[in-house]
Image 1: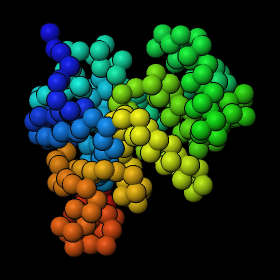
Image 2: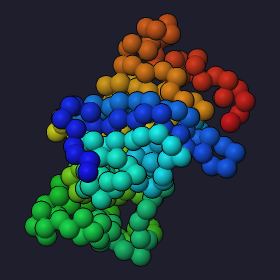
Image 3: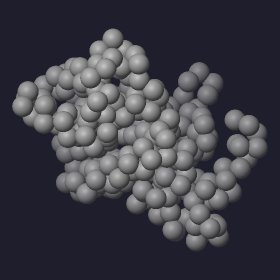
Image 4: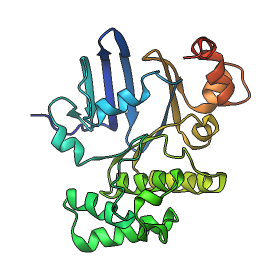
Length: 253
């Protein structure tokens, strides 16, 4: 039986592969993410970011290789892993006929959170993400930005050790994006591990302790934003990204 690792690894990926028929979405990926780290996982569309997250969160099985979440194997220990993680997916996963609050309560109950604790967490998260008034309305009337906020609250309602945030600020206006940045930073202060995917490269530069850039399912760069800017002699992380993923972008993929 798997036991939680004694070292400081939150995520450990070794030779991970995921194939869909004739497409290799993740190709011999190796990566380690430390507990308490805010890790930016970047790459062009179709690079393998979401596939990797879906494997680690139990939504997909790997073709081969190993993925460990706090020492638990993604192919064998999903029940244990689900108690440790929260997932904010790219697409909103809510019930449109329920209010925002009812959606949160539903997912909180699925985690078997005590009623008092659940109510306290709901109030705190709604206030921090500025969704108190909107939470009283049915989700079918929400804007894209409101749905992203609701998804984020649902992902964090179980107070997870590890949060997978897949494009959490898509559809948010600039002020709401900045507020969400501050909220994500506050999670790190609580020693939570955050894996962030985003196409806003300045977001990854501002928030991430380290960044991994993947393309065609392979890890092609790894380091702090400053280390990568020095290595590739650029002024910012976006220039790094464009410089090393240029072939795919030029191909229009």
